[in-house]
Image (tube, rainbow, N blue to C red; front, side):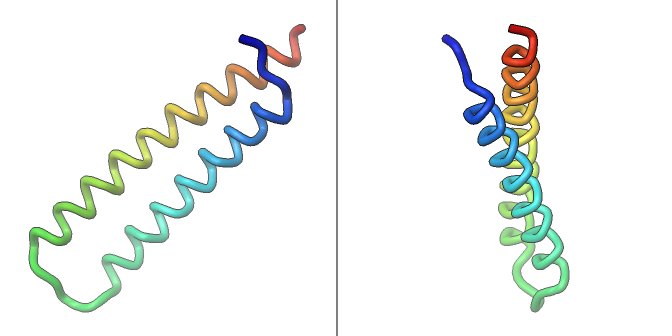
Length: 71
């Protein structure tokens, strides 16, 4: 499957947005009102999983970006 630079750039931008969004959520969780421990555990797991997915998405976008540059 051929990817265009526009598609690759969109995937890279989406990955960057996801990381930023979940880092802001993690910061806001730490500065909000006290909640039950289970709330923090569940949201902490969500933050980690989503950031890992964003990194994988970013790697795919980066490879596609480089592939369009080569040929």
